[in-house]
Length: 243
Image (cartoon, rainbow, N blue to C red; front, top):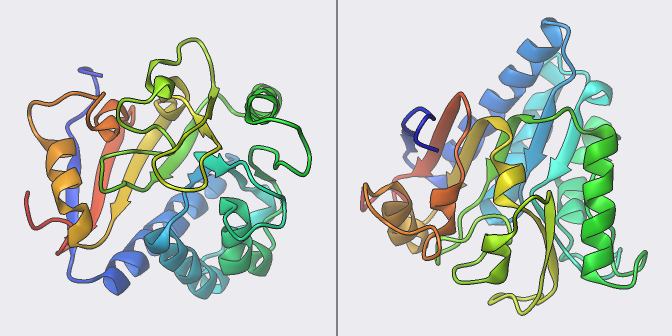
């Protein structure tokens, strides 16, 4: 990824200001893409700060001019659990904003209520990408784990080595639930803009390692993802405290 632009870092004073800024910028990007006649494809993530961003999207959406029926949404990873589980990223996003804004072109990996294994779920999600994806994301939002993981690509896990594939089944996740489906590095790097969103001092060391001049992707997987046009780190002051 040496041919990608260097990352930009944008620091906000607290999680609330961070969530508002990310939500507003995302709505602007989607509105601009639609004004240009494009159908934007956006990658969503899960987690506490993502939920705050999603709730701000719902709050700001009415004034944005975005036609949510013409936005295609994807998830960078999904938990392989029952379809009605609150652990599912898509269920969290539906509760926070998807249902409220009327988004319906939403794709994620099938649940354990629909298919029998994480491998089957990964294969199905990859097929959906091939059939309905645009080739890349306009914006891909990603969280960051305290260990430096991104999507469900964890340090030292076999999924880091997945090649020539869009998705990978993940087992024995170091954080529950143990079974997941994740986009691979190959898929995550099909983004014009990658936005990392991190909040809290528990993320500060991972942010430092991800942005350091030197380091290994196997130790800090977030180092393995960058946007083709831009990579932006949206941080609050606590998450940025070591950079």
